[in-house]
Image: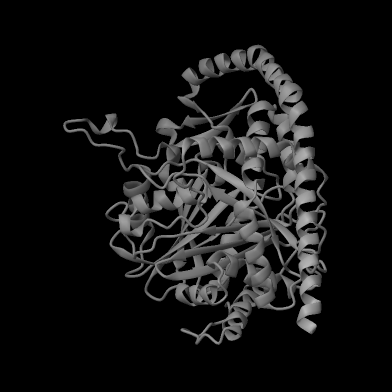
Length: 527
């Protein structure tokens, strides 16, 4: 009897929910059409006309002047708009990517490291034709001998020529004896501005290193040189033996189009163009995150914390038990960790984080460039348990994969960078970006052990750069069956990021306990 009475009610409720969803979809479609029509018939043609006039009156004369200056000041290459976008930084937030490589074996000396960097990174030839003179062989990655210059409002890569001094890029840092000291050094390197008069990269030898009998080498590169996936591929090709196909990272954090027909691709592109104006309006009127981890004024000084290596199989076991993904498990652990930070909770509302996703090809030679789209990801800090946070994170990530938001946002960013002058694009893009609380980045590292200079690479870790008003960066990187997480934060928002790192590990243990999965390795708190 109860089932009979409940059946029609349940069916009626499902029908009502279906009609409401259909009505919302129709309403959004009509609104998207109402916005798309004037956008593509009026606004876009007007922007193209203004851009053409600006190009003829300003760009052409400036480019001619830049070429004349380039003949006297060194060869210059125009910078891609995606790379120049990374110079939209502030004095309190530098776009510096900082990564640490741990090497086993005898400790390296500074001269040995300098020679190794020169041989495998700076001077590695693009090709070696038979009988060609050394002076005629171009370096594989010329960006390491180029500096960024801005002339008449335009960004260029300029060859430094004979002015290049490798010793100014490779140096030694003493008294880095444990993980806490290493995290402090990474945070300091991320906070400091690099000298724009020389190529924007450094390699630091951490002495005596955080591994007994080993060496820790730190790479610092400005984000304009390339995104995370590009730099990982450069690392693979720079290490011993070049790029091993078995070590190429899987397409996690990488968006690659599935094999579809031409008609299906055209329909998808049309859908993205149709909804892009609506999404732009929604983003303009979306509320800003307001919480303790997003202060109004940044201090410009970073603090960082690192977690020990966690076996990737542990995380995969949790993901399988919850019918979820490794990325969702990472997000859920960070959400629970942030919820434990005083004043960071936002009630039932999730904190918003920008997630960079690389479009760089995983095939062919590695190139140093930025090919990114950005996704706005809610982080469920209001969840009452790690399992609830995982369920919410998984639902959000599944909806993101099937929504138009990421491609539409890419179209908006491209239009702003290509059609708007830098003085207008800069504040517009900062306005959109500042609606989130921080940045979350997941970089898939090599799946097979690597060697550099004969020494085995024991581990990788990195700090994701923040920009604009962001005060928090969360990052994870995998390598050879392990996963490591890192937290970097402005001092005005968080003075003890170690609490977030500890919370991340505690949330992972809570998820393991919820599925009764045996722990494969003891988890140690960050040092």
